Image 1 (cartoon, rainbow, N blue to C red):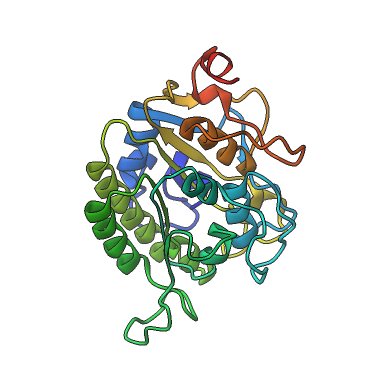
Image 2 (cartoon, helix red, strand yellow):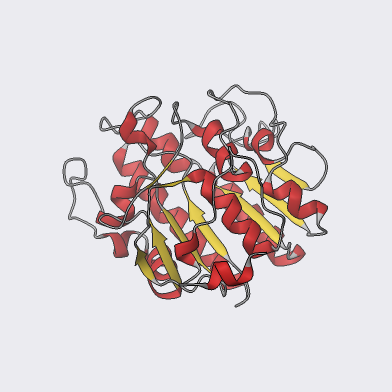
Length: 288
């Protein structure tokens, strides 16, 4: 999902129907990022971007989940060897679960397969057509249903949900399909927000942006830019928040380590907590 649709609504150069403003297109995301929490990377307030240099899915997901650029530069990398934020949460005693439409999220989500519940892709189920994806891709409508049912029943402490239909429709050059997929993803977010309690922290972001051509991303520099929305009791900021310097996807895991009370990653390759989410002085007063 591009930052343009998040903050500006439908693209007048690609959307032939009546324009849809951003809050109407994704109302649940805007309720989260404006009233209940904050947006990072809104136009005029700084940027958040993938590190690259190849702005594609597996490197982006690994950067989000480890807080580092892992060295993966394609969608054919082996399983991450770096423990992820999810691995760290599980080691600290949290109940962790992952649901994803794209099957390769399994490889990006954990360095220790079997450590927690992961449902990524169709798992070879030929009764499920992969469209709009290919291979072992599982459409978002199915991923959403099984993920929300699992959450309602099992109540994991840390829950990672990855949807992919907007990206798949974009690769087909299908802007109408892309917009409809955004609406469905926002509906899924709304249903999830109805299930969580007031003590839950929620972060929503994207693994990469898109090139000016829309259908592509990869090495195009404009495809680096993403967006982020966050809410929860420790995130005191509201609305579009100004970042003191450009943010990276690698800053998300360090931010959530603070929230979860996990040790910081002291590597020089690690990102840094997004301090502007916590409110003035909060992070300094709560970090050893």
